[in-house]
Image 1 (tube, rainbow over the protein chains, first blue to last red):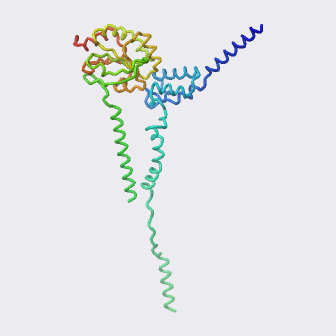
Image 2: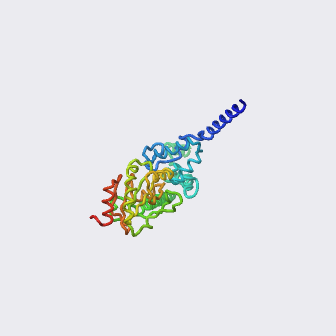
Image 3: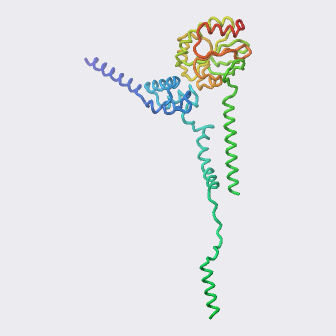
Length: 147
Length: 179
């Protein structure tokens, strides 16, 4: 009886361990958004429904169900299709410039826009005496002369 | 003066970007086969083999022999239809010196190996995961087959799955048996 009990418990533990090993460690949607489509120009893998994209989606689903991590799946897909399949360029090598250049060019752009489209600042010159002021001054001068 | 300098910088940037773009377009198109490829030199390629431990597959290694070059993928339905025809054609024509080569594009290598095994395809097959070679040949769908003369020129192209009679006829043209 004791033997049968321990056998049943061992069996149950084995089943549970097997399930834990195959339990998904990421989701399909978390992984699929890492890729662009190689057949539909300008579309993500998720958007594209070409047979090539559907095959890759099936591969991703299969690996998620087998308990692969997101990193493992991404590595496997890149090994097959090359880095061009990634939706975002990797942050190293030549692709690193794609990330840095926009930020590096931003101050230059601001300076250029500021210089090209800024309104010319008017030069400050002494204002000509207004008509009322000159007539007032003439009046004062005349009164002084009369006195 | 400052405005003039800014304008000069903008013009220089625009010219620089245009030059970069044109260079990228030229590099992308390379020696590609667009439109009608007949009579044009088939672009050489150097790909890892689909099968493990088989080294690399290079078109230039077969210069001097007529080549049947087939583009395919394991997920492609019409390729499954065509595979037995190619396997049979390879057995028949390789004895007469015709080389059969495959380029498996945008595929999962493990699936491609299963495909080759299932259909008994024993000729060399290169793995073109990124689809770069496919693009250079101007292939827009699978399967597509190129018939290449011993001097490396494209004699003909077949779009879609080949049947035995069409394959035989094209090879006869390639060998100069048929006009």
